[in-house]
Image 1 (spheres, protein in one colour):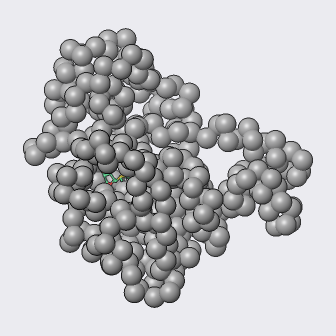
Image 2 (tube, rainbow, N blue to C red; image 1 turned 30 degrees about the vertical axis):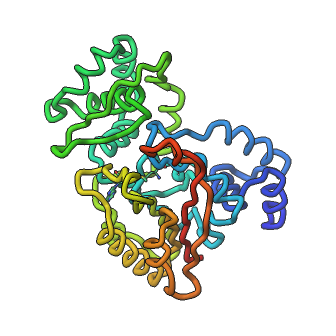
Image 3 (tube, rainbow, N blue to C red; image 1 turned 120 degrees about the vertical axis):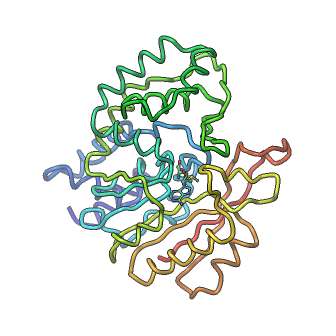
Amino acid sequence: MTQQVIETIASKLNVHPIHLRVFMSDLDNISPENLEAAYKEYVDKNPKPFAKWVGGKRQLVQQFKDMNLYPPYGFDPKTATYFEPFVGGGAMFFDLLPKKAFLSDMNAELVITYNVIKADVEALIKKLKVHKAKNSKEYFLKIREQNIEKLSDTAIAARFIYLNRTGFNGLYRVNRSGKFNVPYADNKNPLICDEINLKKVHNALKNTKILHQDYKKVLDKAKKGDFIYFDPPYYPVNKTSSFTSYTKEGFLEKQQEELRDIFMDLHKRGCFVMLSNSDTKFINELYSGLGKQIVINKVFAGRAINSKGSGRGKIQEVVVINY
Ligand SMILES: C[S@@+](CC[C@H](N)C(=O)[O-])C[C@H]1O[C@@H](n2cnc3c(N)ncnc32)[C@H](O)[C@@H]1O
């Protein structure tokens, strides 16, 4: 099929031609007529993030596509690798579904959960069904209190998803000693065991490595032509909005500067780099004057996390790209 035909079908389907190419690489000699129908079916089959995550990008991915910010035109998903070093819920990964990916995060329990879904999703589903049957506030508190060092990886993953689904707003928040401290949400019908989606996630993770490591490690593996999406803890918009404690360490000026340096190292290497952050003076200055290839774009994002009700409207974010 010629590039022109692919582009015509892609525009009909309102998707990026690269998506269509990733999709087609799994099909032998599909005709243009069948491609359209097969793609529609495939979209229905895309997995969703299995965890609710603060700063999750699910709502923004379409906007990124509409604004031509993602995926990069030159990225070849058959030969190059996708990296998401602050993966969280992984909304972008589940949208792109690249052939080869390295996902990582500093949240150890999250990484264990990804790896359990990848290795033995059936065992996880079994354990989640037990949590589902026993769910109550008392049970939640009992599970929250468990010392995870004594649990198997499958039990850690089931506990993680259970607490994420039944805890307030799907937050992952730890206290100073690193203990999960989110309260029970008391929702009527929390989706504790989304069996179909978990199986889709399992399939999507097949050619993916998921590691518990600092984002800087991306430098060890990324090569020219690879695509890296950075979605770090955001620089706070103001002092009261600083929900940055995904991890005990926090992510402020010094860490944001180091991240900018790594962004530039990857840029010089010939990688495609994309980064989200808050639309603040500090971040705008950090990514200004770096050469004309580094462009700061603005997008609107609805954000639910804010201590003041008035801050709940749409706020602007930046998306920095080098392509
Ligand atoms: C904004 S969230 C990512 C959200 C994700 N894009 C999504 O769609 O759900 C930031 C993530 O960075 C992780 N993180 C914080 N510090 C890190 C570090 N130094 N290295 C790697 N990951 C880190 C957090 O655990 C959190 O999952």
